Length: 318
Ligand SMILES: [Zn+2]
Image (cartoon, rainbow, N blue to C red; front, side):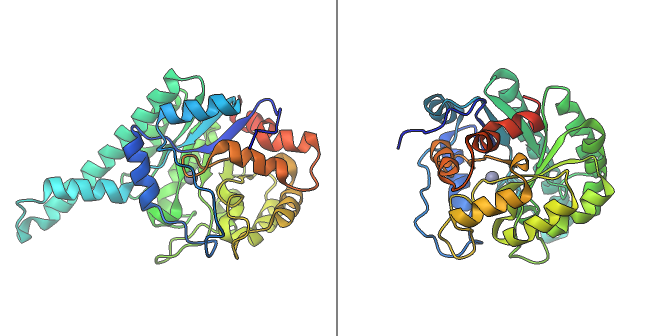
């Protein structure tokens, strides 16, 4: 399918990037998308998701910029650290070994963020939001880390309450929200229902965050995911919150995702100037995502350009 847009700039605000194609493939294989219901025939991308894959597909599609929303895999890092550190542990040493594992996983997150920050520093196509898992380090350690990386040009942070295991208003995030709000850094969070324990990221669960930090540049990914019916109320109550349409636009046809007609209505109800195109590469192909935005019914050329890059240029100061 040829790309059918001349939007300029063309910005993809939801991209994942991996050091190698193998690591990207492993991440794709281990992240199960469950919330929209049965797969209606979603077109998944074949790319592994390293910089070579991204550059190739972006060159073909004429993209201006990728915003990498980095997601450090805590569970995978914990498995690695456990294998490395617990081989000779005796039961009496379990607490000490657990503490060592916790330190190792926290350090791995910092190293992973430094890697992605260096990619952005060296490639004009890439901007980055670094991964923050507030369960791994103290709020102050994370806030200092984010402040340091912001000096290198990092644009903000990415949160994933559901896979990291907390709620959006978790007290461990307060100092981090404060830092981002004060520094004008973007906080992009996964949004959608939870499935294990109390962890969840439904749109209305962000209301208290937006009340307490009214200047926070908050972006909710996936338009609320399978909780998208809550999204208009949150958008109405808090005019500052922005959204990306990644993933949910690919799942059209599934029982808990909107049809293209409903998606257009949802975007208009939120406000076309508050929604941004995201592909969730390498899960999906950014060129196909762009085609889907072009295929949404009832939008003007100007509105499509806003969705495809105009809004993102404003939010990310591109
Ligand atoms: Zn994502």
